[in-house]
Length: 236
Ligand code: GRF
Image (cartoon, rainbow, N blue to C red; front, side, top):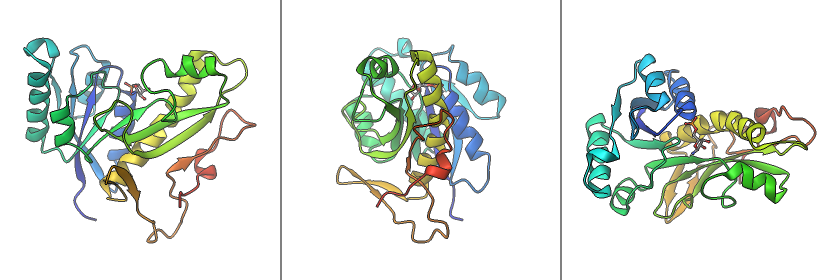
């Protein structure tokens, strides 16, 4: 196998997606390794989780820098010192500036708790319930200048059940996120999903004996617990 892609995760809080990526990368066959975790908040719970798993962590607080550009610059310098090849945003709650985004374009990905392009921004689950949609989910996409707008790499769908409240729906989506993000990072790290001309180009997986490698996961409308793997379908 070619060298595993050095990946740094940016967080601001709980870090459950970060934890899922670290868990996936603990398998030596996984195409990415997590070489560092950066948080803009010193009290982010995910920092302790990463440290406990032997991952180097760094806090880069906005308050320690005179401008947004200087803060972005410090994060960029930390990424360079980690030797980062891929940046994975996982609940990182700041908007990164144009210079930073352009530098990492095609090498920086994010997970968003909705089926983009629906429900960009915050409070996605409450808005989904208010809208009365029956299918909700999560998206991993390349990060571009506009928030939650970059080319989509992979999506997972979950049903919205009758009687769901925001927390119930968030928990169901989060479970899907924890499966989707490792899958999507793996695709990017292997070069099977790459950004080209403002779009995601997906490899054809012709080399896969089992064609069930998925970039789309679909929900079972009749069951709350869906077997996403079984329902996985490859996109054309
Ligand atoms: C996730 O729902 C993610 O999709 C969104 O922020 C949340 C972060 O949760 N971007 P965690 O910190 O990964 O637990």
